[in-house]
Amino acid sequence: MLFLPPAVLLFTLFVVMPAGEAGWYSAFNWNGFGRPTRWIGLDNYRYVFENRAFGIALWNNVLVIAVSLVVQLPLALTLAVILAERFRGAVALRLVFFLPYILAEIATGMIFSFVYDGNYGLLTAIWGWFGAEAPHLLASPATAMPAILVVIVWKYFGFHMMLFIAALQGMDRGVIEAARIDGATGWQLQRHVVLPLLYPTIRLSIFFVVVGSLQLFDLVMPLTRGGPADASHTIVSFLYTFGVMRMRVGFGSAVGVILFVICATFAFTYKRWFMRDE
View 1 (tube, helix red, strand yellow):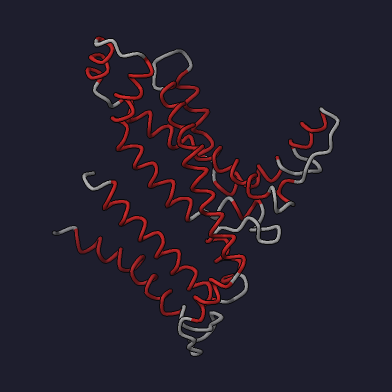
View 2: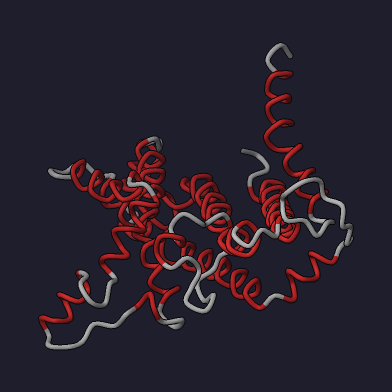
């Protein structure tokens, strides 16, 4: 009880009050200067859902979540199963795969903006070896978002891999040895022993993936700034571009409230149904 009031105070100052202020500002047509006076009620929310770019941003967030769950986590789990074993070079390989996660998001975006550059980048050099003209991936609405998805998988799979490795190394080896003595094959061992023991860590990784994907911003801005033609916006980059940069603070606050509701609903629902005992 002694340590609870400071935590509650910090939570109130940095979570509850900003969320409440965003909800209040979202009811005004306000540019951020002076006091908000032009009350418009729920019109900002209507403007958000009528905005074509917001629909694209929402779909892109769903796409990021799907690719992270279908590609990133299985890749991380497969490599974790391999690298959790003791063999020469295992530690070095873990470090190599984990290094992208350590790299700052802005730095990652700048690096890949060069890699994807259709005139001078690494991609241009590779295509040049085959005598072909390199595509401008970040300049096309059809390829900008897939290019960002590749960066996301490359950047974050090492984090989940290390979570799985830690869980694998913390398992009761007696259970695994007992399964081997009973004649379980390698596939049966992974499917019926290792994977069930990893379920708590997998559920935690899924939670990180979904919440992190909903908040994606740092990688998008240095790569595409949400373009071209708003094709690669996420909800947060949409908020920044259409709310902050265009001085539509009330509109941006409405977007922030929508994102907060989505994240809070998912967090509490997921905790209630999938992480009840953890």
